[in-house]
Amino acid sequence: VGRHPTPQSGPAKVSGVDRILAIGSGKGGVGKSTVSSNLAVALAKAGRKVGLLDADIYGPSQPRMMGVNKRPGSPDGKTIIPLHAHGVTMMSLGLMMEEGKAVVWRGPMLMGALQQMLGQVQWGKLDVLIVDLPPGTGDVQLTLCQKAEVTGAIVVSTPQDVALLDARKAIDMFNSVRTPILGMIENMSSFQCPTCGSEHHIFGHGGVATEAERLGVPLLGALPIDLETRLAGDAGTPIAAGDGPMARAYGQLAQRLID
Ligand code: ADP
Image (cartoon, rainbow, N blue to C red):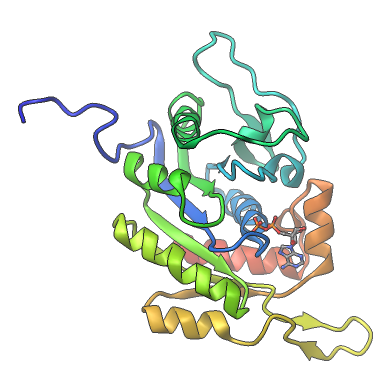
């Protein structure tokens, strides 16, 4: 009572950033980072000023997926100059850590690092900052939602039951911290055989649509298992940077978020 609000006290705006979109998942390996980088690139192609913050502390994959490996500069030792790739301003904790070293930070250190990424990185003016969260419902997710004004969260899942079970928990967490859920994305939705053209549902069929309906959140899109997507991610040029069918699919997804 009687105390002035401090930056620690509640959700605050990140200076210069219009909207923050958090991309989460229950399970790892469902394509959350792939969706984050491609969505960032697709939004940039649609003319938006986009930032990408890789907060997936235990497995920061954005440096590889976006094709950057330079250590970000800090001329004054306080602010951090982000990097640029494929039209996107980006920063990853992976760029500050030694490659191949395990992260053994405890909660408070993780939370401090995240706050640094939000507060000290010179993001400049951004229409949207995409935050690639770690999988699950831990300290990083809670800190982001409690310290920053997150416009909304998107939960990526495969149609597989084990992934959906965890996606439900992620949605429950966002609800508990009152972060609006913008919708779910079904990744690895189907696979088209390159030889015979027939469609296979390797991780099940329609599971995310059913779950989204049950939870009353929109299904924003369904993305197939696609070899080019994987190769492009590994090569550091997200598939959305090109002009093939997957780039168009990400373009449509980006458009849904803009509208
Ligand atoms: P997460 O961030 O959920 O851990 P990633 O985005 O790192 O998942 O994806 C895990 C692996 O699956 C990566 O090698 C990525 O290239 C691949 N991948 C993701 N989505 C697809 C897809 N739709 N088709 C093919 N490979 C994919």
